[in-house]
Image (cartoon, rainbow, N blue to C red; front, top):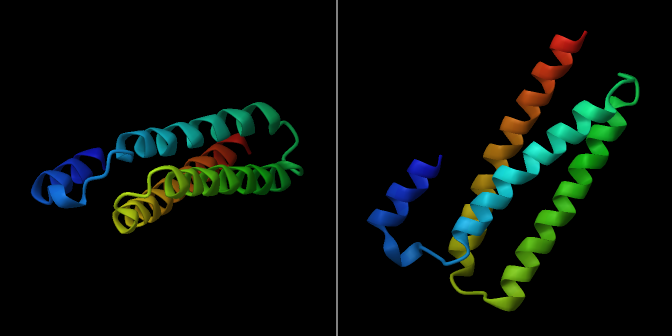
Length: 108
């Protein structure tokens, strides 16, 4: 994924924005934190869906805060930022969900 964005921004440098490396780092770090939190908290499988949905809600608000911070502080290339943000959100959400589902399947 990083390679795809690197190639894209290399071919179309006018769409590169300075906050992208930090955005990519945030999207890589949040799923790891959530996964560790859920693995440590998910002793009772009945409480797992509630904990998972709570972690997704917290993640959403953190990411919304990041997007709002970017818009208010810098705001350069907002369309490029939002497109990258959406792509990263969808890809990492799919990755996080499949990782959690594999963990649950192996736990049973």
